[in-house]
Image 1 (tube, helix red, strand yellow):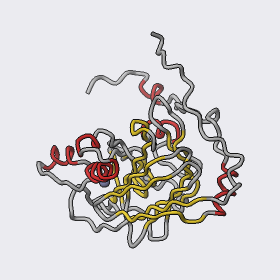
Image 2 (image 1 turned 180 degrees about the vertical axis):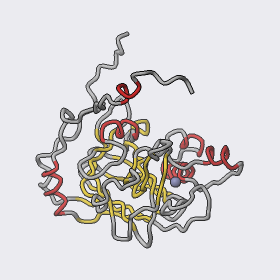
Image 3 (image 1 turned 90 degrees about the vertical axis):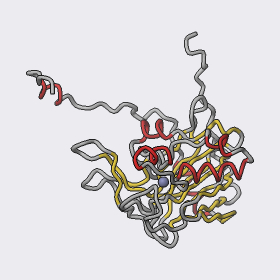
Image 4 (image 1 turned 135 degrees about the vertical axis):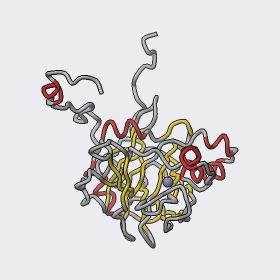
Length: 281
Ligand SMILES: [Zn+2]
């Protein structure tokens, strides 16, 4: 280790500054969503089998619920604009704006250049969890997704039912793209129900048994038409390991619901980002 400077303590004592204060973001009209969600009726459902993925189409103005069914299970979620697969959920920017974990009131942001909210989280039955003594919390945007490449590096074996592969197969089947073309669209996820954090001493990404139980759900309002692709992670509740068939795994359910006519009259769909894209050139 290099020499510690004399003013090390003073440098460490500098207080942090929030990178992206969200006060000036376009505000989500949560009272509008709260009123609309009291009128919901179910439109469609799909069961996501364990160690596999499924797709559901959600129209702007509808709500998507992801339900825990049968047993504790985490899910890896990708969102794609229905019109353009290149507009997709941007986990990193969502994290920069809202923090390492998301809950009701937070928005799921789209990639550049549109960078508009794809969805607004409107209800989360795990919002009571908060941040635990280990620094863990639920619904993370810090993990990427379990994948066979990292598995290959770490264990030297090929496992084909990681979330990355599950999402790839489901997107290919839904769109007609080849497996290799579909794979290029799979992106960093929202880890639904997953309980994670960074260790205080080494800063390492950790997971722990998800507090989710059957009956829990997270709900989001669709700000644009999108495809939701969800993998039921081979890690199950992620209490021990993933990227294998060792963990107990359960299905998840995605459900699309629509509010009553007239409840969204005040709603303004999000505009695409207004940056002129000249980049100073
Ligand atoms: Zn996974």
